[in-house]
Amino acid sequence: MQPKSAIASAFAGAVLISATFLSAQSPDPAVPYPSEYRTWVMVKSYVVTPESKTFKDRGGFHHYYANDKALVGYRTGEFPEGSMIVDEGVGAKDVDGVTIETDLRNISLMHKDARYTATGGWGYEVFEGGNTVGTAGAKTQGVCYGCHPGAKDRDYVFSTSRIATGSRKQ
Image (cartoon, rainbow, N blue to C red; front, top):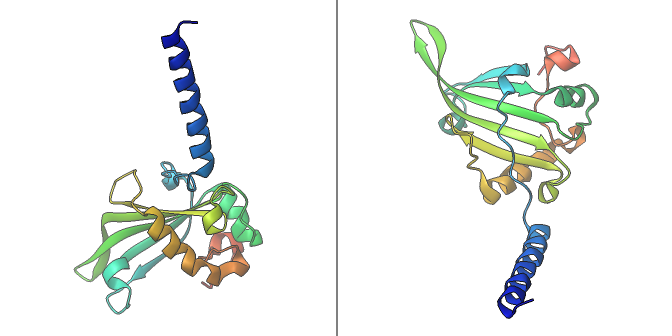
């Protein structure tokens, strides 16, 4: 082997070892965009009105969608690996006494995956408007996870589903 080839081979090996080490040290994986969520079951809807203290940030319609795995979780209280729950936030306005939907504000997603070690096995992400790239970041992940232990008895999921439970009580 010529000296330049040996140096190039050694450099390539060092890069490979570094990449392997860094990937083992990397943070939790990105939460994937749920491109087919509108084909999932809509398990719940509600409207946040101006009377709510959360109206400024969350006003409007909220439609909850669950993939097949999440439906199992709603029924049993234990959400299996791969469960995904979407909170689709849509603006609202009054037109002649009828509240109608306006633009898509955001999609908030919970994704059950054991690789999300820092947040109890759930990944959290927010996709603004029609963007398919999340905006939550590590700080927001921590904020989401900071509240969800309040629903630890339901595998960290606050929402309920009247479809999965057969109940109209929310």
